[in-house]
Image (cartoon, rainbow, N blue to C red; front, top):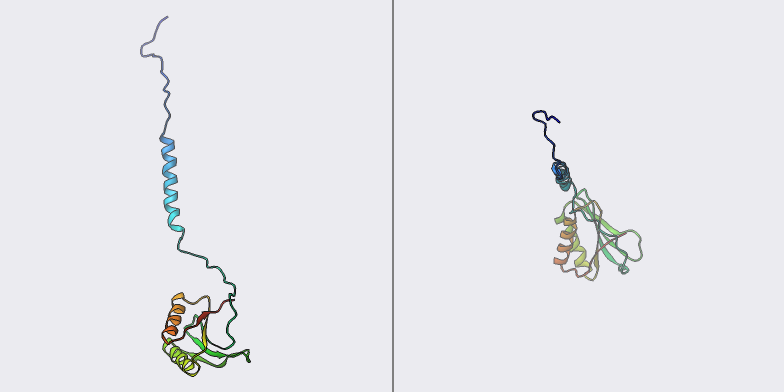
Length: 143
């Protein structure tokens, strides 16, 4: 038997090649880093509320619309539509008219009905200002 120069027996390596696994992990890391900002955790779906109690028969209704206009009306048991329905251009005028209604009939409660497109802050501000006028019962209208 003759051996040629440079001919050797090859040894097999029994090691796992981890380079493809590192490549896959880096691709997954990049995918999660790109997808994470796309999820918006601050979005909440508010539930609809059932009517817990019957609204009073006579009340002052404040209707808030997204186009910055608002309507104030006096609803009575006898009429299905509001009596003395008045529009207000801004919140100062709205509160002035609410004060007039409250001074005329201080026992009436206030019902705020706001469009679902209106800012939550505007509804809270109207409720807060109505409480400052001395109105004890202020409620929200729901469907």
